[in-house]
Image 1 (tube, rainbow, N blue to C red):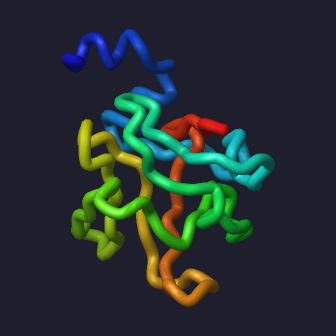
Image 2 (tube, helix red, strand yellow):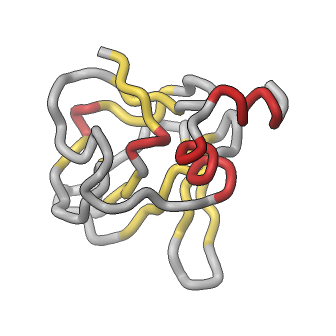
Amino acid sequence: MNEEQIKQKLTPEQYKVLREKGTEAPFTGKYVHKTVDGNYVCMVCQNTLFSSDAQFDSGTGWPSFDKAITGAVEYKQEVDGRTEITCTKCKSHLGHVFDDGPTDTGKRFCVNSVCLDLKK
């Protein structure tokens, strides 16, 4: 899929977040709170990124997970010290990972809802 096809597939907000590294407003996304079991996939390429079993309510306003599916995300250190996470298949921006998670992984993957599609 080329960039024009991706742009046609996504809403303007999805495109801004996924392809231009934007951020959705906190507490506005449909996956802020876990509602059903399943797997979260990348909105662009359908790569399986997170299991709902790894989701927790961080209180930050974005869906949070304590781990990603092995090999599903790539990590990039940003100038501001944060660690960006992107989809390994299509390189789309998903959010950031922090070392302040409440589970034994110690991780909090903070992901924009518009980047995700839930497959039940």
